[in-house]
Image (cartoon, rainbow over all chains, first blue to last red; front, side, top):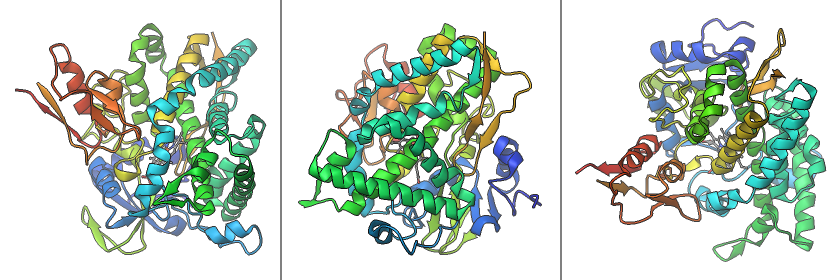
Length: 403
Length: 65
Ligand code: HEM
Ligand code: SF4
């Protein structure tokens, strides 16, 4: 059904909105800054920076126990014991944790993604990007989403989890099932999570016998208050790293390449002034923020005059917040060297993306290597670019030609 | 000029130590700490402002005096 009014009937899966949500946010920020819908189980959607940031910081009134906005599938009746233990709503700490559990669950993984830990992966990321872009350039044209962006994060995450690269295609399918395709199809979502859980269950069992130099082994060896971390927690965190670290980052890489394909002046400037990269990466993250997260209301509360009731869901549109003219000058323009940029593409408050250092490194290296091999490229004539939307937005088909 | 870091606001976005590595560094968890006592030497003022203007948590304050 077409959307009757974006203020009280929005649809985050609407085809035109997914392709170009920016005018809708501009309108909502100015007229109805906390929109509502009954679709997909019902939710609120604040679009102003101030409100989004305030809710992200307010763990007293807003819980993270369900960060996907569409209703969860029923718990499976068959399947692995682990699935049942985790329940239908798959717990993925720390993203689905509230304080106080959140603090230790997060501290457990932060060192694995701190800048120093991430540096180690830069050379392999660079080699991977180089070989991928070489293949595309050699062919003269190709799909920069499928053949490039989509290939990068999955391989780095597999490496971190100590899982063979040959699993990459399977992981990609699972992640798309869990988020992109599963968002509107509970059965697909449930099946994807079940496969991921079953797989991680086996991997955890293997690591117990033969620990390796990888995140799962590190989590199994970790202690919290003198106690080992329970298996279901290790699996939950494994799920999170798999699901949160892959399509988010490939979406960001894909959007960055889409921008550079369609804005030759920015592309040429970046090629000529490589020192702009650190600021440019942040600016591209701001303008094309891929991730929108949800909260569940814990206690009745009013946000900007809107009465939210216990168990209501709220979508935190970090992408819209990042284009709020109250906070960003000329918000709908990409200004590669933007000097004031408090963007919240990685969220804000206690759930700030734990993988942000890794994501930034991958995004920077992916752009650098693409531009090094292909300083001149553009969208293929007449080709269709397709976008995935909902809670993670980015291009899924991006045909480009080189030269 | 001096920079002040408000520890309990910092959530480790890492903007400051990327933009002003001579003033901020990362601890083992990715949160910021000051490299020294927060004194900004001549020539570092722009970086100090850049760090403060990019912190999404408003965890960095500048003492312009
Ligand atoms: C450009 C790519 C990425 C974006 C835009 C992004 C965005 C986000 C956002 C907005 C949150 C906050 C969720 C909330 O407030 O509910 C988050 C949390 C998280 N992200 Fe990312 N993410 C990206 C890549 C990654 C990567 C590569 C990893 C690592 C494997 C990762 C791991 C996590 C984890 C573990 C959390 C939960 C942190 C917590 O709850 O304390 N993300 N991410
Ligand atoms: S930019 Fe702000 S939140 Fe991020 S590490 Fe620095 S002080 Fe902390």
